[in-house]
Image 1 (spheres, rainbow, N blue to C red):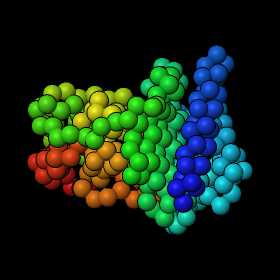
Image 2 (cartoon, protein in one colour):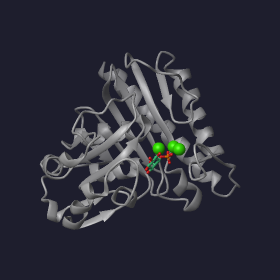
Image 3 (cartoon, helix red, strand yellow):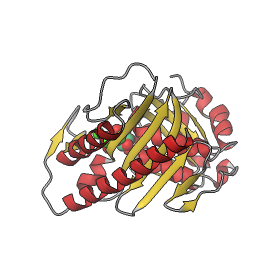
Length: 267
Ligand code: IPD
Ligand code: CA
Ligand code: CA
Ligand code: CA
């Protein structure tokens, strides 16, 4: 069994690096940009190309594994049995298009609903955040320490300005008092990078109202491996096959924000 996961880990890293090289090579070419659900929901030929690249590799080496990917080239998955690769070929497509940075490849691998491996690759910085359940978490070859407690006053919280202005998902009065109290707020425009930053201790918490499984699958494995807490905004565990709100934080901080601020949130 250990050999099996070592093999999965080795292939995943190899394919992620190769996918990163393809993305970097695309910088000098013109992108084909389309929109999906609204004019700001962008998708490019590279999002599609990279997802198809992963699917062809996985199917070749692990034909029994199933794949859930944002661009829909995987399969329709209704149960969490067996091994499932949850893939976001480019997380932060808007940043990819506008900035050519602040985007990542995100790959989470689950077995019977349990996260076994997580990979978030910040292509431009060549930083691969990776974790195996029970085997520690790393940035490239550097092992990450377990997450330590921090007070609200000393914490940096990542959240989008949308959630403290009028929006259809959360009353702005729930999070604005938290924004006033924390040391600082940030917003990077890539859920995967924000989750990786929580794992790396660069952020203390991340709060967002709606993510899909491919946005949070890898980050959940990384953060939990380091003792961080991963739930929705009501404090409930995330379902790896469903969209939901996401609230991740260092231990202690999670409990405090949940009881002091998020208890006022009506989901
Ligand atoms: C998006 C990014 C963004 C988050 C959105 C996601 P995509 O993913 O992670 O930060 O706020 O909800 O959809 O579409 O760029 O892969
Ligand atoms: Ca997208
Ligand atoms: Ca995404
Ligand atoms: Ca994406």
